[in-house]
Length: 173
Image 1 (tube, one colour):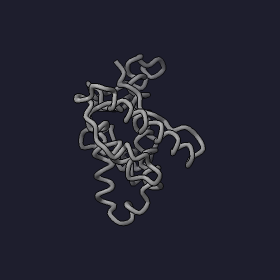
Image 2 (image 1 turned 120 degrees about the horizontal axis):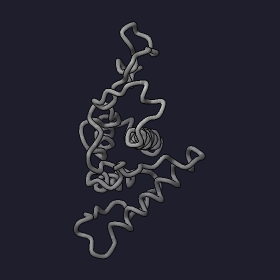
Image 3 (image 1 turned 90 degrees about the horizontal axis):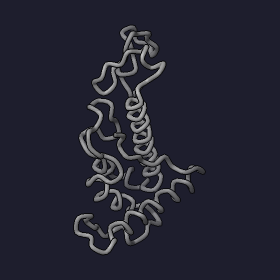
């Protein structure tokens, strides 16, 4: 309830409301259309589920790997984590429209901030501490950095949770 708030409740204060339509990202979707939903809608919903899972799994792992920073400076740590993702939504997404351009793994703010976030974790590879701009890269240094960050993230997540993490997907077309 703390996370989803009033978005989860109907007028009577219950979580199950039978209506003719639902609203999602400003779109009114007739319930009857969900028996055979449009392909684009299914892709958008799946994309959002992957993206939300990735964001919350990253948050959970960051709490483990940067435990002391969360205790010492929780506001700053939250701001750093939120700065990875574009817009003002932080870890929630459904309040705005479905993005019309890529906002996932390879958007500018993620590629500039994520390696720095991971570099603060115990056992992080030293190469994550040096920022690299994708547009300035002429020798694949940027892609090597991102590959190293991804491998470190996936292995660290697996080590702590015993399964691979959900990873972001590209925005559906």
